Image 1 (spheres, rainbow, N blue to C red):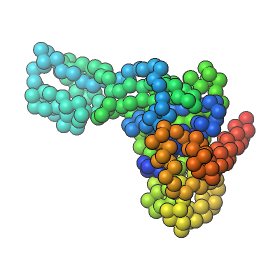
Image 2 (cartoon, one colour):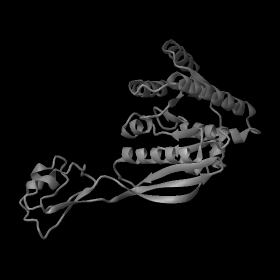
Image 3 (cartoon, one colour):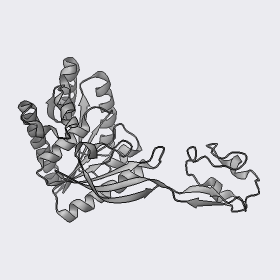
Image 4 (cartoon, rainbow, N blue to C red):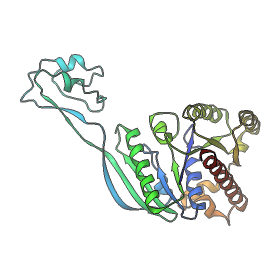
Length: 296
C-alpha cells in the first residue's frame, strides 16, 4: 500500500482534478483522502455519499468560572494575544490555546473545555471510499484534523486491502501541508507554467526535499507561457526531478467539475487529454513502484 499525495504551491493549479482522475484510473483500488480540510471540495467533484460522520474537537479552550474569579487581572496581564478583556471575557478567535491563563490563575477559576471545531467523514464514491473533513469557519488546528483524516484513510485502506491511497493535499507550505506530507510514500506536485506558479512550486519542492520524500512534477496549463514551461522543464531536468505529464489549458476540466466527473470520464470529449492522463498515471505508478524496490 502506497500513499501518493498530490499538492501544489498555489490554489487553482488543478491538483484536485488530477487527484480525482488518478483515483478513477486505479480501478477502485484506492482510498481517497481529502487533506485540504480548510477548503475541502473533492467530495463535491466525486459526487460522494456520507456513510459515517465524526465530530472533530481541536485543542481545549479556556473557560472562566465567574463565581471563582476575583478579577485580579493576572490572566489579562499574561495573555500575549490580547484575548482576555479587562472584564475577563475570552475572545476565542484571538485565543491561541497556550493555556498560560489556565496555569497561572491564582484562584483556579479557569478550566479547559474541548469545543467542536468541525467534522470528518467516511463517504462512498463511484471510484472508492473517501475520507474527508470540514473545518468550521475560524476553526483552528487544521494540521491535527489533517492527521486524523490521513490516519483514518490509511486504516481503511489497510482493512480493505487497497494498493493505493490518493491524497488531495492543501496548497502552499503551511502547517496543514506539512501534516499532509509527513510519512507519505510519494509526492506529485502540480504546477502551472507561469512565473508565479513556478515560484510557488520551488517553495513546495524545498519542503518536499527537507522531508526527504520522492517526488515528481505534473505541468498543467503548459501553453499559457511556453517560454516559462521550457525553462521549468530544463530546470527540473538539471535537478533530476521527473515530469510525468504536461496538460494544456482546456475547458474540459471545468466541464468535468460541473458534471461531477473526473477527466478520464470525459474520454469522448477530449480523447487526447484522456490518453495523456493515462500516460501520466502509468508513469507515476512506475516511479512509486521503484521507490518500493529501493526501500526493500
